[in-house]
Length: 294
Length: 156
Image 1 (cartoon, one colour):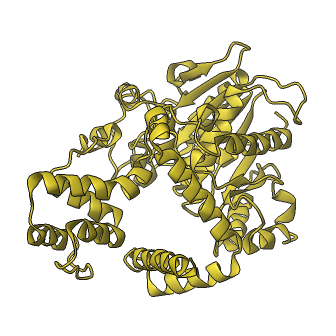
Image 2 (image 1 turned 30 degrees about the vertical axis):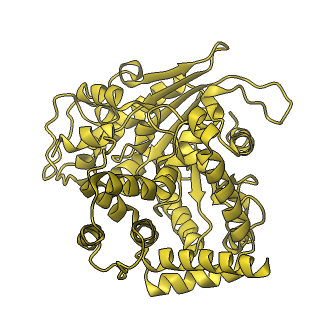
């Protein structure tokens, strides 16, 4: 049964998509064991781009391929709405059909490794913004039901499902969190980061269904290569946050921000410091896999 | 030797200061940054690494083998590109300064007494990335089209 991880932070500019693309991409590319030197296992990984800005999609797909998929509505919008739904930002058309399309009809294969590892993506589209902005006088239950059924099917196919989630817009955050086992919260140690963590954890708590809710994991992003900042230290020593903090941090390497159109990922890069960046990413990804039990 | 070092240091400090003051950051943001710089011992070390990365990428061998980074190229090659176009088109200093003024009306005045190369370097050290791209476009430099942007703007 696959594990679902939502990558989310309400604060912008924290490297949410950067974290999702690099960690998710590495998971689907390399067999990773629980500790350095231990035998690794290949995984089937699905990336779901659930953000109208579709930056995750741009990282993995060449423009021509992306727009061809979008034209066929082979994107996350089809999880929520039927193919023939008219997109009207002033009046959201709630689908009558509560059954989403099959995962295989929406997932695009990025790579398959010789040892059975798989990396697929369901790209997003600007049209999702109509869903985010749309005002509906009907309840959104059908969309929530479609999303839940879709994720259930994803779990039966993939080992890890990573959802790069739009941070605002109640439908996205609700459907993503309710159907996730874990939430990866990237944080850049900055002035308002500490308060942002508090808000995020409050938010996750509020979206819980009863006692069931996703387990938060705080990932410090874009950290200095050595030392620890005041803000990171503040969060780590806060009794309410300490238990959620990942030990490893994703350091500030230019290599993490460069992927575009399927190229430029750190595992194929020969740029200066790319080896150090790769090792750093591997350490973060390994820790996350252990934390989520995948 | 110390005098040479001091001059180089002062020049770098002036360039940093000029870039920050024309960056669009507010006074409060700049003051906050100055405090953080005083408190953060890792900043200079990280910047040193970054500078080494960039210089390595821009070395002739690296560029031939590994391709280009748009942002780094823009920062370091763009002034040279602009200068070459200006030379080729035989633009006068007054004409170039006029174009610069069009692109960035609030830019600190650049003296026409400077050489053309100095004028271009001073402009690039002060203007924002968007302004310098606009400047290059006005000079007639070919721009690389972004296929994603093309697809997105088709919807407009």
